[in-house]
Image 1 (spheres, rainbow, N blue to C red):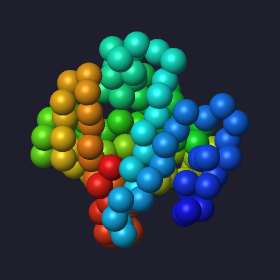
Image 2: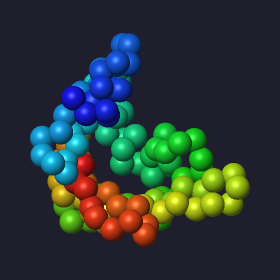
Image 3: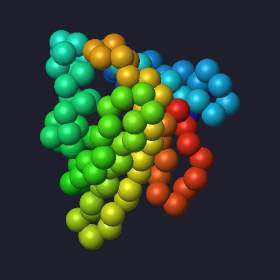
Amino acid sequence: MTRIAKEATEMKGNRTKVTTPADREIRIERIFNASRGRVWKAHTDPTLLAQWWGRGNKLVIEVLQLERGGHWRFVEHTDDGGAHGFEGRYAEVTPQERIAFTFEWDGMPGMSRW
């Protein structure tokens, strides 16, 4: 079991499933106590997305092209003036069903598909 999967499994009451189907792939599935529409909106509405994504810092949604092949880009701004950008492309967008995307930190090449 990977460290990530072990940590997710050990969290009490966690309804998160983490698997590693391939060498460079991590799949995270989570059940939320919310309607499908509400969860979809939290992942697709830039205002809501900026409220929960990240580590508690201000998040700016620079690009959000929610379609297959569409580009997304977010920048996290820290209290000490730092900025951490990351972006990717949408591999799959099936409304209220599934979102799959790549992820890459600025300056750290090598995409991973989510």
